[in-house]
Image 1 (cartoon, rainbow, N blue to C red):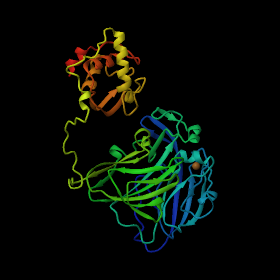
Image 2: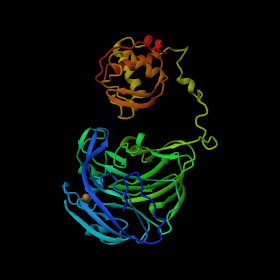
Image 3: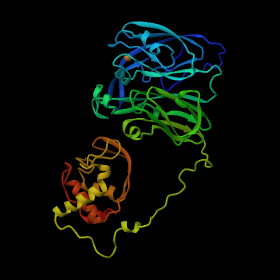
Image 4: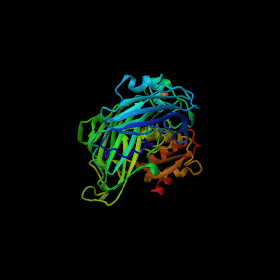
Length: 435
Ligand code: CU
């Protein structure tokens, strides 16, 4: 029987009128692979990928399941399929040592989308290493027609090193027990479904997502930014809900979400427990091509300056009391420190270390190392788009700051003389020239 690697889904069985005996050959492969850029991990897989091969059968089929444990593997494994009615979901009949093959059969008596996973002790570790996938038991009458089907499965990963720390990372039982993953990803790695690997669709098409959650620990708040699900088979059972924004997918559970794409653009799949999406990897893309429909979505129609009530307070004072000027470098640093704490620290962090992937570091920064005046521009004008600081790429938006020339001189001088930077002084005249 044909099985597919994620994000692909096998052809439907709905043209078939009778149940069949189906033979599934599933090979367990332990292999090193990419968890994130520069980060390797030893995955344990059903069929070579995380998640494992997608299995699609029809209600009433008899499945003869062959579990093969590759002779190069180091560990014994088995399989617990939630589609199985029987002890251990098959686990009690499928314990397989490296270089062995076990066989058991089951009847697919219930329809739905089911998780399968390894259940060999320590179970949590086998699942944490990527041993899960989905099996769809299609109803006799089939599912409704759609244009595209995709297979997306979430999982949480526990590495000894922190998020982004390079090299081959070992599994951390300590973090797994605390349920504090470094990575939460779709389809086995950060960026598995972004950029060139993004899911594709065309305007007007109906999409069906088979979404699973392998865990081992976290519950997913699955959401597609900019879409509303027309139909959700809740918990992948037979109950269908409509017009859903975010659907819960328990660890060891699944959901089927269907929606029509009405307008072009990039739609972002996330776990809406949102730090997981933007800081731990649980983010994928669906790229939709086709005609704009301004009747549904206009795009940006205009942008104007908005001066809110009290906005004038933030403007540079043109008359009245001039701010007291720092006369010594020491005073300047002191005043700069106060500005830093109230304005800069929220993003660039208390030690100027920044936040990987979001806010560039001001500490030991090579951005203004050779030309200290380069520190002025982003504060005066803001900075949008891609920059590289200390070898790390950043692509975010820094708004221009409503500070006086004096305040900018003070805070930039403070930064230059702290956080391991090389020193130097910015004067208010230098700031003025940059306006
Ligand atoms: Cu296993």
